Structures are given as C-alpha cells and as structure tokens.
Length: 159
Image 1 (cartoon, rainbow, N blue to C red):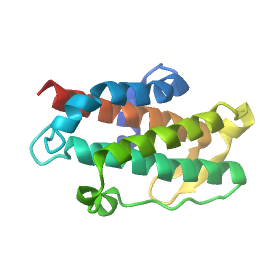
Image 2 (image 1 turned 90 degrees about the vertical axis):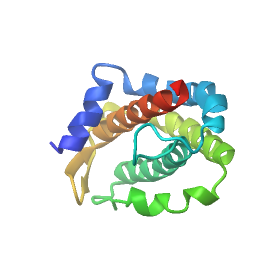
Image 3 (image 1 turned 120 degrees about the vertical axis):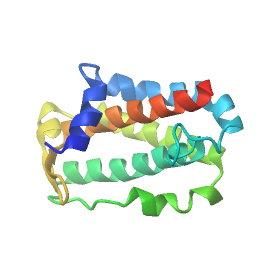
Image 4 (image 1 turned 120 degrees about the horizontal axis):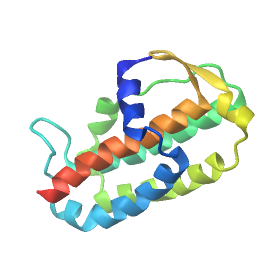
C-alpha cells in the first residue's frame, strides 16, 4: 500500500469512518472563530495556512465526492488532481464560503455514504498513481484525511 495512504489510514485507526466524517463539520465550526483570526498562520514553517487548509478540505470534498460517485457508477479509472495547482487560487477565495461549501458537500456526501451497501463498499476503481482502491478504502481515507487536517488546524488555533 502507498505509504501516504497508510499514514492517513493510521490516523483513523479503528474509528468508524462515517462517524468521523459526520463530526468534522462541527469540529471545523467550533474552530472557525479562532481560525478566521489566524487565517494567514501555518501549523509549521513552509506549510499551508488555516485558510488554505479549509479551502483544500472543500476541494477534496468536491473531488472525492465525484470519485466515489464514479466508483458506484462503474467507472474503472479515476483522475488524480494536483492539490498544489488547485491551491494556487485559494488566496482569492473567501474563507467563510470555503467552510460553507465544505459543510454542504459533506452533508450531501454523508447521505450517499449512509446509502451504500456492503457490495458498494467493495467496488474498486483504479487510481493511476496508487493502483486499485475500493469505495470503502476511499471513504476511510477521506476520514483519516479529515483527522490529519483537523490536527493541523488545532495546532494553528492553539497558537
């Protein structure tokens, strides 16, 4: 397995992916007043700011929502996206809108996740850079991805 995927999945551990995915919007909302004041701060030198992380979360929700729907539709190969190329435009995007977009898309994706069957969880697609991935693995990855960025945002919020 890809080392990045392993690291992100290790953050999820034995936690239920849907529970983590459902809690993320509330956790972001709780952090948002402090993060709005620290929108230009990073969790470490050379790393993304809280503004960029929240914009990234909205973009990932959009991208993964599309990918997961492709899996369910029987598409056999998904298209990767370059997160750094997408991030080049984040400075021009309003932070409150990114948070609202994330929350709306997450609600829509959660409705989908709660509707899938065990057979759906096992459907696979080929990621050109990482190889075969199942719907279930992708959903768990998304939850671990949330935890990764929530930790970074908590570091920023703690100052």
